Length: 193
Ligand SMILES: CCCCC/C=C\C/C=C\C/C=C\C/C=C\CCCC(=O)SCCNC(=O)CCNC(=O)[C@H](O)C(C)(C)COP(=O)(O)OP(=O)(O)OC[C@H]1O[C@@H](n2cnc3c(N)ncnc32)[C@H](O)[C@@H]1OP(=O)(O)O
Image (cartoon, rainbow, N blue to C red):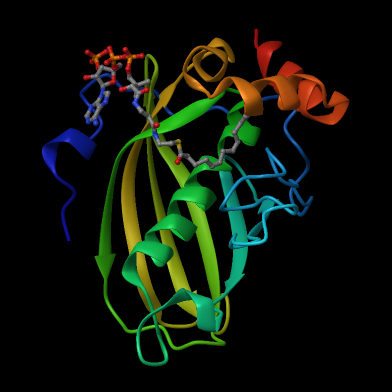
């Protein structure tokens, strides 16, 4: 399957570079925000996806489909699966040490995903062009080498912490800025040579 033109790295795009201070391969990355729908531990409605650093500029993650994630009887909703892919791709930020947001995300749904299935996700950066990060991800059924059920190509765009302060709702921004762990996580990304 071929990604749309917007997701094809332009000529001259650079190979991704793993940041020297990136977490070691195998290390759990932890949530980037406790209330995040994708990864937040304090988010009761969330996916609670746990991502780990991989080799190079890659991550892996696991997501177990719950009954609350159904779209059809006993099967995962496609939007939920796309969220799991989005979150896994977003976690690549930790390896580049740049803050990014999703600009474009294209998902292929190849196999239905039953409730209680653990989806084994992997994502890697393909290329970087200025602020644009081109990446790809797949989700496999039941095991890291299981059949691919979903895959996605994405364009993430680098932003500064200021993006969230400017656009986020005041109540949540104030709470995030009052949380030392959150400030530490945000600062880690700002020191980017
Ligand atoms: C105090 C709290 C702090 C909290 C943060 C702390 C730590 C966080 C750290 C790390 C995060 C770690 C893990 C994250 C994990 C998962 C998160 C899930 C990710 C999401 O779920 S995130 C939510 C959904 N996401 C959005 O909410 C974005 C809304 N959007 C915008 O905010 C703007 O739209 C933006 C910023 C994207 C661009 O705006 P902009 O003005 O900065 O830049 P501009 O428009 O010039 O785009 C620059 C170049 O990207 C190209 N480009 C842009 N968009 C494109 C598209 N759609 N298709 C094709 N190309 C596109 C342009 O064509 C141009 O390309 P060129 O340079 O070649 O012209």
